Image (cartoon, rainbow, N blue to C red):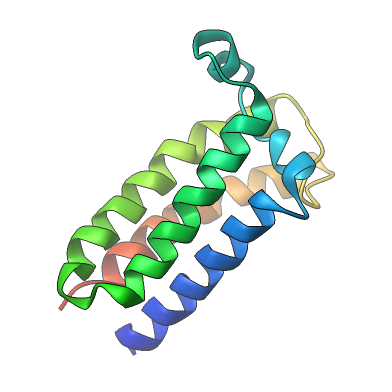
Length: 126
């Protein structure tokens, strides 16, 4: 069951990463907190592209590096924690994006993030 969960998560990460890089770049920009671009020398599109590349790499690593799966799972969980402020910024700023067009849907998404963290950790345990 863990193997199936890990493969589903890997496929989801690759798909999400590719969507960041290609067809949903503008949508994902709504999730980038303004403070990120105020502090770092990068624009919102750059943040989306970088996070998309990381998602693809982590997704591929989940299946391509079986000996490192616990480490990759921990990195993926940390990534989910790191992007959580973007989800909060989207909810607080009432920003539409990625099909999240109501306060209810944006807040519901916040509760899904801990599930992703747990999924990454659980599916990569031995």
